[in-house]
Length: 595
Image (cartoon, rainbow, N blue to C red; front, side):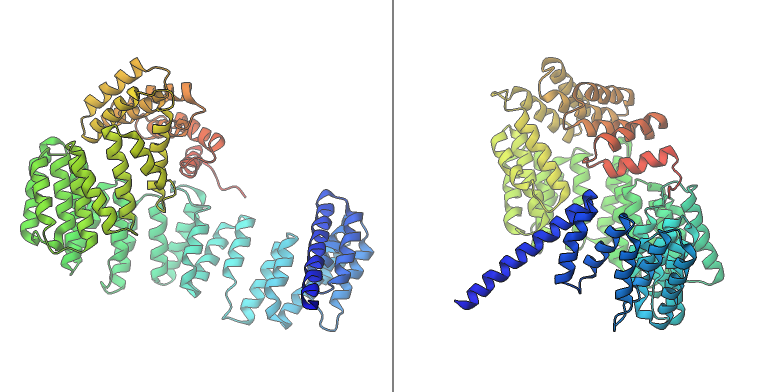
């Protein structure tokens, strides 16, 4: 019982103490320094070991110009049996506030000397100098510590300070030195480089970093410099130069690993830099000793050919796929190539029957559950294309059961929803996407939310769901690459359902199809209409971003592109396009680095 009473009293005391601390901080933040002093004096008396309370007292006295009181508090800490010499910096600052700079410098010098005596105080004293914006002195502290002990690495701290000062060359050098000492710091360095580096190779920071790295390479070869140059060129989307650096690394590593070169291939493909990607892939095929790597290279080449093909090329692509399958076989080892081939047959060459037959035969091979699920996913997608919805749903459901904890299961669930939506079963579709809104995969979560809102918004006022059924049909036509028919179906919706909830969706979808078919002025008109009529609705940021992108990349009007990116930056801070829009806006504005 006595123990319970003690615990109760202790908890009450803690609560009161916590409330006093909150109240003291509140007084301080409001500028009521006299009351803050009274509260912090009580807190400090109860906890004299808490330097935070002491420093708040010092700061409150300084605000009231009670410099003597703040000096006495600091001197007490410095003159303890176990002196805390970091407060020499605070004492110097106290004199600086009184315009007694010569005295302040004496205490700063004492703090610097103490680092030489006790290097383990480096961080705390350097941070004190940083706190008072005495950055040159903080630099001296870190440099002195590294001079005394070559094993310590304060280069990251020094780089950050140089960045604050706008000394970019020194900043980059310190980051590079930090990574040379500890390779694990490379992602941190690259993340900080990204604050200054842009896509524009003429940007000041880009020029300086390139110069620093090239100078380092002239002084002596080091793979790190090639890696960082490759990273820089990738940011600039100059994949030819990045490839040159990766080849240099590959040769110096003794042809040991092609992982970085393959990663570069994937990035170039994502950016649709097909010419550069082709050169890189051909290098991989030529140099790799692994049949698997060669096969992957050929698969990438086929993806490029499919992405850039016209209908006249389909026969050649079919023959090339067949040649590769003759060379590498049609067994499990080439199942990903076979998926690509049959996707091409169904979605491009319009040979759905052959694609379905091929994939069904492939499912009979000795597959693990992930391989089987991937093949069945493609098979189901083709069945949806062929409007065999119920058969497709069976496959999607099988995938969900077979790989329950995998992202493939979530993708299959989304495709169940999409297939139900194509069928006009909006209730079941909405139930499926409602579950997926919290998907661990952001892309699936975004797609699920978009479908849920589409169904929700267009079933509230229209119990027959007439407009939504028409839109779902137009959506299916787009999936089937029947772009002309899809555009016509959306035009019918825009004519007969003007002013209804479906209008903004139809404008956006039709705009995307106009872009796909090269009708850029019509796409522009759709996006402008959407912005004019639905500026405050959920699809507005999509329209702004697509319009900005259209002006930048197709209509060659960078000024208009900049204006629309700017509106995303200032009006749509929570948009999924915000980060990319801000980057493009700054690049088009020709920003110099601001310090």
